[in-house]
Length: 133
Image 1 (tube, rainbow, N blue to C red):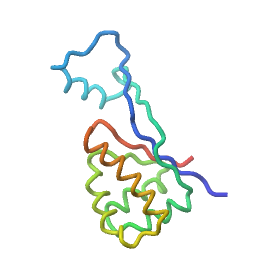
Image 2 (cartoon, rainbow, N blue to C red):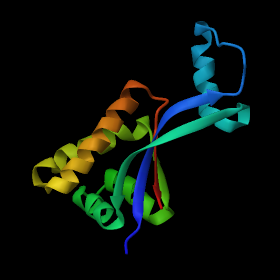
Image 3 (cartoon, helix red, strand yellow):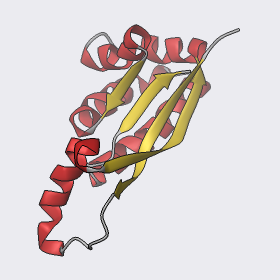
Image 4 (cartoon, rainbow, N blue to C red):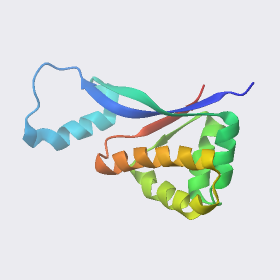
């Protein structure tokens, strides 16, 4: 029996405060969100991608040698990884490079990953957390 890999996307952050934050303080709020629970911020995640360990092995193997493969392979080494704005171009370019040779199952999973990468590009506070269950 194989395990499961799940990628969660940050879909909300909740501030433990009653006052509304003024629009001109948006950067301060983003900074506060980035430092997280230290200031009473809770991350709310939604599962967006799932696959078996076997499929994940195929996903990693499909990528060219280099940083993108190393990034995704980190989940197998450490049990979890985070993908944020600093990884979107790296992963997107690697997927684009191998797209013509992908089988349908791997291509479909990478397509869903690209949707989340695009969301991160649009709103940098969003990120993905991948974990082995």
